[in-house]
Length: 358
Length: 256
Image 1 (tube, rainbow over the protein chains, first blue to last red):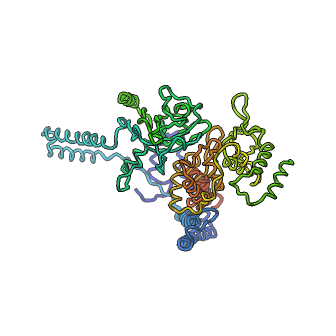
Image 2 (cartoon, rainbow over the protein chains, first blue to last red; image 1 turned 90 degrees about the vertical axis):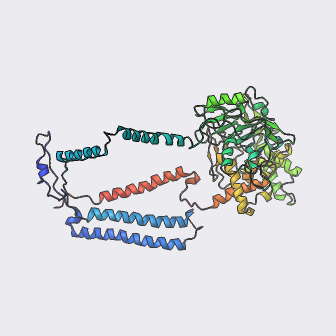
Image 3 (spheres, chains in turn red, brown; image 1 turned 90 degrees about the horizontal axis):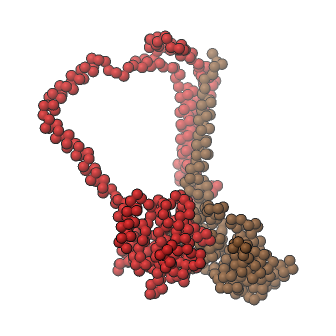
């Protein structure tokens, strides 16, 4: 089967049908490579390939040298000199080794053409009959046909195994999207500057000011100085409760009906999470009052109740009602009355539940 | 012209005792003369702005913008604008440092506004690693949305853009945060304190001083640009290599 045969004389080739519209041209006559017929070129190819391997060796040695001699903070053309030296020497060596192997195979390794005839995939009829005899003998001995109770109970067990446990466990892979309408905001919670956690007075904001803010609950500490909400829980709470505070000229603002008292002297507060797929947004243009989402270019007009004026988002940015506490700091008057973050199929139903609760 | 010469002469002979913070009445008067010549055609003779019939303006009112805004706009060459457009680009300043100071003194005398930051909060090299780290948190929270995580800048709608922060002086970065030029929101000293602002500047300057460990970063625009370079230059070189290998190893018909 695998013995090389001279081209054109194979018995397989002779058995081909003769009635094809175009005659089988047979195999082309073998053409020799330059390196096969010219001893000088052969020698040159040998030198070329060994030269590539030799250069690769030199580069690999240079890699080792550079590893110890080039300092971490040296630069070369504005790049890190160490990364450049290591990358160029190792990459160059591997490129040269690969190219050398390809050239070796193409130019110098043996050049005979091999014909391997194909055989039918189907087993012979005797083999097929023998297999069926074995299978039937096995079925008879196990008694699958004679003892249906055993067979059926096994089928039932396999069925329950493949359907029951996976479905039960899939339910615990993560919370379902609905039912998470609340954030950590609640009536009276102070709005604090992100990172520093300092509370904010209306007088500290100027027209055109943007503050990336968080609920004070995220910065509350117990008596040992540890954050009460911490770890994954803090990240999840932050991801839902992040807000942006902006101050505009009061006459520039067109509040939605029923939200006339949600701002303080032109200061408004909106969710920082885009209602399209939930990217955090704070790209606010103070003169146009538009906030842009960098992910898909959804644009919201914060002077016009967070209305979508461009892009794929389908809902306005949820607004947080603002107030001022007895010490003069900005507080939330309520949790969001709309569902924050990305829209999802059951949103309308959850919004209805949220409306009923408030 | 005579006024500019007068201002220049004044600048040459002005007593050095007057500090930048204490604007003398002579500074204010010199600034007013410069303003009338160079700025009043758009901002109005009393710096109250010039309103168009359609409700827009040729130049906004400068009442209350403070010395910091003038120092930023004139010091970075954004004002006077060469031509109207979506955004005033940064260019070589038209006024000398002395003239800029006088203009700032005049505008600051119109109404109270943010003043030029003190040197104490511009000395970003005094920031330690902890400060730089904190500045980085503030930067990534407040600035990255428009200016990119290393301050390389980015695009805004309608031909506007957030400019790169590379090569901008610490004073001008501070003034931009304080006064919110053009579309940029303001970040008042009460919310982002002067120390925080110093740390933000330290973060930007530190990260921009680092060599490009990732290789050719394409201006810090992120993996997409890196990938583009890799694809065009790197894959291009490999394709060229493959073509070379294919071309040299071909069989020859001419020989026996």
